[in-house]
Length: 270
Image (tube, rainbow, N blue to C red; front, side, top):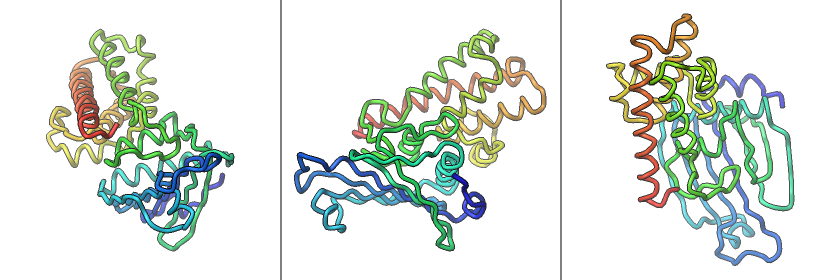
């Protein structure tokens, strides 16, 4: 799909995702949840509503509704990743089972539509966008693009695996055991981290100490951006100050991921 430049670069955008579970025979019970609407504004606000089968048929009403703020930086990252998916990987699909539809709208009301099966596979640069959205938006039981409800609902396991793999590489000073220094960036991409040249990490953690960063997404972006800076300057990840910084950052990233898993289990947001 060709995505018009006004949507790709416009700072005031909105992404709405409608996820519908199958409504074939046997028909759902009238109060069974069959539709979810997730709206993310680039200003950082998120609205979520779920409908029962009866409400879905009538086209009005909600079972439950949530409104949360996630901040502009995170909201824009989600919208930009989905726009990137539309440009690089999107293929329209349709089936009789569960499906999703999405629309990106700019501040002048211009729109781009997409639709697909509620079976996952919506990725941008190897990052699973359902998991990325669930990781960032603190709302439980969101279907997004795959309707998954398993224990790795938000993809935290992938981040923990990334941490373990690269901790060993830095500890031994052997990047080749994890695929090489260039593959570190690819691994950050697969985790869905935002490469913003360290802007948000610098704003939120002025000391530059990764151990002081309390936000998993911000620390992930800081790690990815630091890698990019080192590679761009032809530096060595595995020596001196760089090695110490990455080891401390990975250790704290693992701690934040562990805390996120425990917190979600305690609150039933898994």
